[in-house]
Figure 1 (tube, helix red, strand yellow):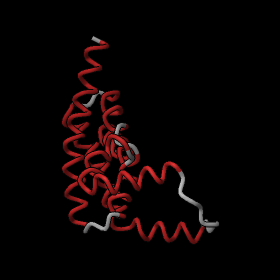
Figure 2 (spheres, rainbow, N blue to C red; figure 1 turned 90 degrees about the horizontal axis):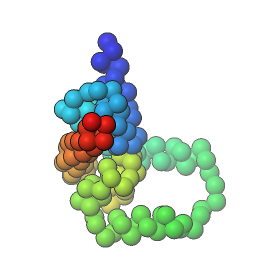
Figure 3 (cartoon, rainbow, N blue to C red; figure 1 turned 180 degrees about the vertical axis):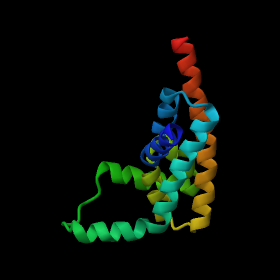
Figure 4 (cartoon, rainbow, N blue to C red; figure 1 turned 135 degrees about the horizontal axis):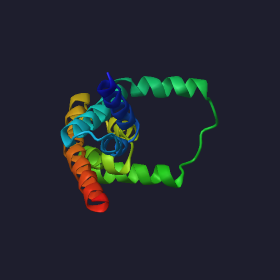
Amino acid sequence: MEKIAQYLGLVIGSMFKFFLGPAAGISLGLSIWETAICTILGMMISVILFTYFGPYLLNWLGLLFRREPRTFSRRSRRLVRYRQSFGLYGVALFTPLLFTPILGTLLAVSLGANRRKILVTMLISAVFWGFVVTWLMMYLKKSLVG
């Protein structure tokens, strides 16, 4: 039962910030495989939820928190420029590193790509970065701690 709670905590953390998965997995003493799979699962749950329900959620939040339209901020201009420069593959590739899974998915959805393509590219990115980041963090822990 304790192992399930560890996995669940790792998945939930990875849903919101990708690097929380490997960091939590290392601190809990899980293996590279357990940590990477839970991290990938957490990101993909977030991607699936926001690919299918993101537009509805944004509309609902817009109704709850009506406010005057704002001009573009520096951050929103940067996100638009990034999205236009790199496209779906760039957004998917850098989502675990630069964005949260939620923000990366919303950027990918705003590109107008079909849902299946978003899911496949985000899955490839999550698998790649899940194992790379987990391995790097475990390697750094072993080399620093001993």
